[in-house]
Image (cartoon, rainbow, N blue to C red):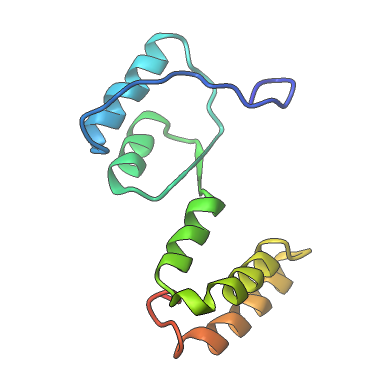
Amino acid sequence: MNEEGYREILGLQIGNSESESSWSEFFGWLKDRGLRGVDLIISDQHGGLVQAIEKHFQGATWQRCQTHFIRNILDAAPKYMQDALLEEIRGILHAPNKQTARLLLEQVLAKWEEKAPKAMQ
């Protein structure tokens, strides 16, 4: 996000894979172009990407993308359960505070771990 609170595309590059070396090359290119002061990075949890973030942006906070997180959970759940599970996951993510979110998480895990064990890992 820029100083006015808007998201901007900082760069676009085609890579051969999502390996750490491909992401490192991309992040190096962004830094060569002047990228500085990165405080927060939100991304999916691909191993190569996370490794490159740790290498290039020490001190920045990393957060897993909620959209990718939800997709990963739903992909691991049977199709007929996905709508109900999605509603409960959104309840956790929109909880008013950490304590409520943890309580809702415990309830969701207890309810779904036998029905959709892979999704609850």
